[in-house]
Image 1: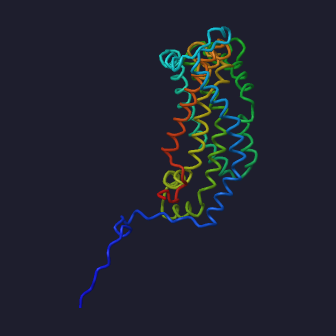
Image 2: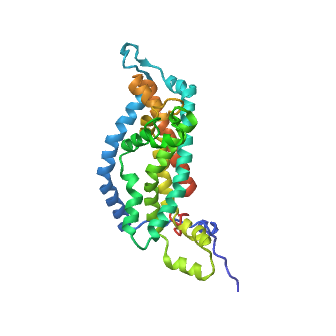
Image 3: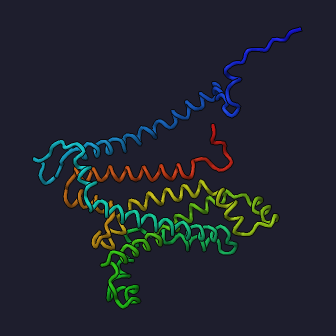
Length: 314
């Protein structure tokens, strides 16, 4: 008696780890179609609000367009980008921006986590503690910047008096340090608020089980709390990094961008609204937008977009 071996199909020779994606059902397709229809008005409004300004900025960046000399307007291609990227002022402003962004966000992450744990674990006076922590974030940035400027003004500021009426805002290093201090004081509560929301993702039963197994407080925090807070940490870092990279108001009030403290936004402002050079200013705006997009991609690729425990291999 002979047995015949059935022919091997292409699906059977496929690697076991690679499964054929199931075709969505009719209900799933209808649900997805409904989702797109519900999102369509918001997408159209976003395109109408952002697409035209971005497109017009790209158009201006390819022109030699100086508002005070409209007769000189002409198409110059990528010459404006070449002028910006070959300018030492741009690279110095970019370096100052990166220093302020990296240092301030790193400090805010550490302090924000401590404040988040404090607000989350507080038993007595929880409302009072949370209100007190969030007060700096509720103050308008311009008002807070003017208060810091007054505090460091010689002969009148109380902080300047502690350092023999010195003028730290007139020196590059100390001025940048004060700008970072003002940023940290103002926006650390925002970081703490986002991280406190992430703490609610951590199951208490899991922490209790780890405590029973003999895990120390640091082990529970580093091995359990931080991995489960990964999505919240991503959102907090992404929002604050993008916001810090576009810093303008604190520098504008404290130093005006003088003494080598100008950021890329300050440099862009000087070209657009002081020099009326719309070609160079638009090119800087596009370059800043590209930098922001690169930062967002780095964070999303580095942290991942899925929450822990989800299957991202689909």
